Structures are given as structure tokens and as C-alpha cells.
Image 1: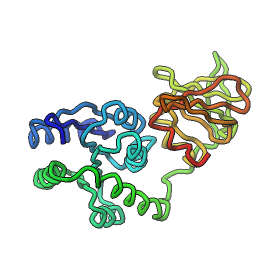
Image 2 (image 1 turned 30 degrees about the vertical axis):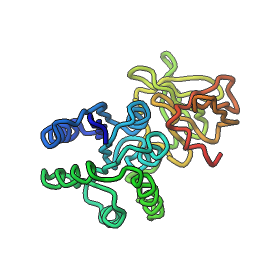
Image 3 (image 1 turned 120 degrees about the vertical axis):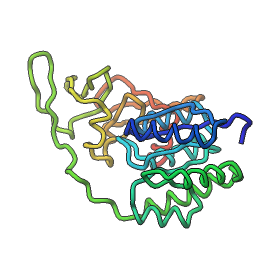
Length: 257
């Protein structure tokens, strides 16, 4: 642990995030909060940028979950100690108890937080990444949770004054554009009145992957992926001439491709 320990907090609920930050500052005054994130993609990029000593990750976040962020952090920021923040989930809690990985149960209790911070400050960080990888492997073997709703099968988008119905299977990628999202197909582009943050939970995660804070791609539309010397990637598409940038922290998503 450095003389000036650093921390990232990722929680999509603003009040809960502010509360956790306040509790951390009260319990560990020397701790410096270097990033506060409201979704998984922002957390991944902030982890790679800041390489904090510790990260508190809400398990349920829009888009990438806390578990998916942690999996990417094993490579993006291997010396960061991960603490999961979760609502009651007996399967996950049992895994955490036997995996030597810290977690906080909502609502967060000061004594539990204090005990967690004590372990963080005394633990040998070299052992953390292997334990985290083992825990994530165990959790990945759990039965898939029943989704609250079926993934989207079509979208309503606009091009000028015209409204289009676009089948999800025809989407090549989504690109964030300020308050809107551009949906790109082989035949053109249209605008959605939804942010990526709102869109991600409604997409089939087996087909659509976030590859950048502002980009989601349909895996079926990818022709190939290359990596440059900095670790960033470039996606080539089957039906479009442009290429898409892959942030370095997201490159492990494509190990099997």
C-alpha cells in the first residue's frame, strides 16, 4: 500500500455512491478518492487510468456488472484490491466468505467497513489477483439468473422526421452521441432517444459487447480485431468500411476470438 492510498468507487445509485464515499473518508481520512463511476464501462476505464489501490464495485450496475469489471481489472489493474458491494445474494455471499475476497452488504455498516479497510491495509496485494480470479471463475459457474425481461428484438429510431423500426439482429453497433445514441446498420444510421447506459441492460449480452465507453458492438458483425503496441484494439466490420476503437481495458473480452 502506498503512502497516499487511492480508491475508486463504482455505484450507479447517486445517493448510495455519495454515502459510501463519505463513510470511506470518515473511516480512512488518508484515502484519496480518484474516481467515482456510475456504470461498469466508466469503472473499467478509470481502473486502467488510475490503477487505484482499492476499488469498491457495486455488483449490479448498468451494462458491465461489478463482476465483469473485476474480471477485466485482473489485467487492467492487477494490484487493485476489489471490494464488492452487494444487496443480499446468498450464493454470492457464500462464495465471498470462502474466497477470501471482501464484500460489503447494503446498507453498509460502519463496523463491517472498518474491518474491511483493516484487511485491505494489511493484506499482501500479490495474493489478491489469483484469489479474485478463482472467485470469479466459481461465480461464473452459477446458473444464469432469470432475466426480468426478454432482450430487445427491435428498436424505434429516427432519421430526420421519419421513424424506423430496426431489428436488433440488423444492428452493427451503437455509438454514444451526447444525449442520444446512433444505431448503425449496413444500410445507414439513425438516432435513438436512449443513452448507452439505458440501452445496455436491454440487449442480449451474448451478442452485444461494450468495447469503449461510447461504443457497443454486435459480435456477429465483427470481421476481425487487431491490437497496437499500446494495447488498444481496432475492430473491422463485415458490412461497414469504418473501424471501431477498443479501449485497452476491454481487450480481454476478445481473448477467445
